[in-house]
Image (cartoon, rainbow, N blue to C red; front, side):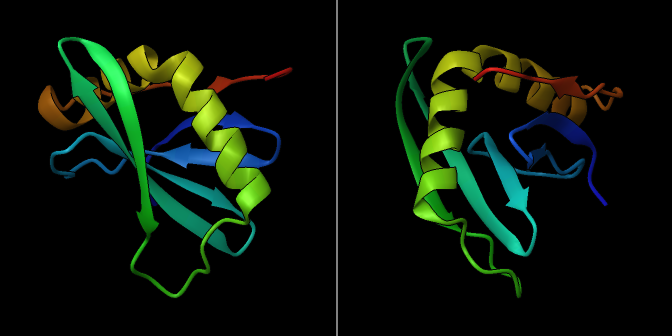
Length: 101
């Protein structure tokens, strides 16, 4: 199981230890999972691409996809920091529990 990076509204955000570019997260809720790729240009978030996780889980429902996008728009810099700590520098990360997103 990859490290849990964030959690909110029953959604768990994971970052895989041995992951690859582009910077992305895996969002799970129950039997649903989607991958969200951050599109960053000149140190600004310019887009969020969503794709299937490529496993047996179904894609997140639209309402949860919207919640994850809202989360990423607000916390994208923290996501990048955690992704770099874990994937690039191979250091541990701690989970951040978010309420009232």
